[in-house]
Image (tube, rainbow, N blue to C red; front, side):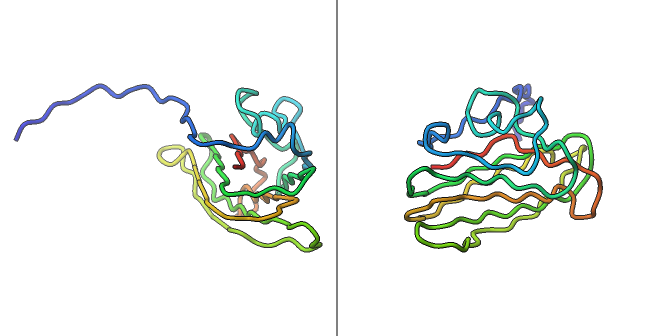
Length: 157
């Protein structure tokens, strides 16, 4: 058997292909908490920083409210945790024009482990017509620890 050991390439930020909505121009954002050193713009606008972090521990919400109804075909989320082992849960929901209640899209749990899994990347495809809102709810530790929610990036296309 022929084999060769190759050098590992340094980890680069993953480039997300595709066209995404300009949330700065098309929407406003509501958040339940924000660490001033890690504002929500850091997660929603490429090149703005290293992501959002809540100022307080516990469950948090990030709600994107569109100025005009949008067609959403894709939601790309990235979370990272390199320091503590924990199981996080997040849920996505959306609201359509003319409706008052939100519609559930997906709920996902992920266990972070500093010695192994430190990055969660989820890329969902949908066909949401006339979306007026998209909401991300994050429970940073389903075990109830005093963990602060964080988000590396959220892209909507």
